[in-house]
Image (cartoon, rainbow, N blue to C red; front, side, top):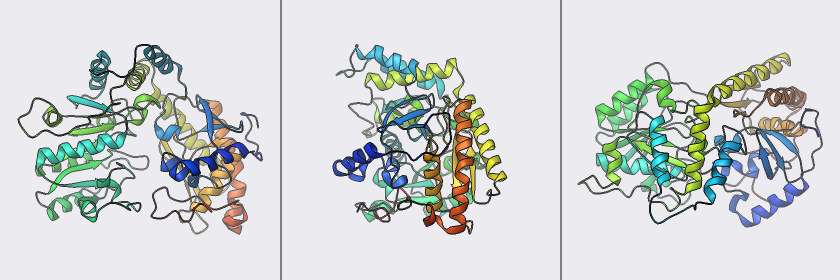
Length: 451
């Protein structure tokens, strides 16, 4: 299969299948992230990646794909982006981890706070869940309250306070689950009702300022900000996805609403592991030395300040100063969505499949013959894209996606539609090989339990 051709190919996944089977024997779930699991892809098509460059990846069998999702949205500049890699190579010879802070920690913090104008202090870590849970600890310590209100958005943390409210909550005490309350994004009254039902109990409100499929309604974010201030709750914006995709300054800068705390990760390091908690000084210092209050154990991590992650972050900041990856993602994402929807419309399938969302965070929606969201139809679409050299659970783009990559993808979508239409007419089982994909967060291994 050549990278320029969207012609369907009977791909060989022999080596990938062998490696995936070994992973299932060695690693629970066969992957270190549930979203990367084999149950998220067609059963006979689970490529194991060997390398990537730009917007392309190659698997263990030598198959080449235009990739979307880009490391679960953590890569905006492209795989193996040389300016970041060069900075990391240079720092390797200077050591990675010391028993005292390094100069790099000062420089990285200054870079970060230069981007996020609403924050006074920052603390670095390695993953987003540590940052969000640290934010909740600060909020609880500052307010003396125990409950947290979370918007109905996909994901905030792997820790008990959030996962307890998902279907995948085995092992989490009931007493923990009841402390997390849900409200509806863009419905200020639903949040207001939580404060009324639990007076003096809600320590923090967690939300993304915007998401792939949801822009804030006029006045919504401002209303949340005012409500949190009036109720004495800490407002936390999760900028894991929006940071460096909506803007290098975060969604808070785009929409002009400043949270008390914000959490960051993913594209901060263009794939290198680094995350951050940032916010107002009086909150952050509860984990510091300028406080007379009982101290919060705040992100005391061995690897949070290691030099590679912070160097990668600083190189990403420099790339955003030198170039405009946000504008590139917006332009290429808009082009991709419009062109894909045009070929879908030409095939008369708009009511069954479409590409929607923020240009830097696109998703494709797949529906069955009755117009309902469908995992089997999603699997048909994924498989047909894979056969044409496109890999991705979404169309989340990067600044490395070229016009040729976009054209290849649009042609792959057009080529996938006849099989999709057949599945609508004859049922997905007439097209599928193996079982459909399943939601990543679900209560049991079924319907993709290993046989």
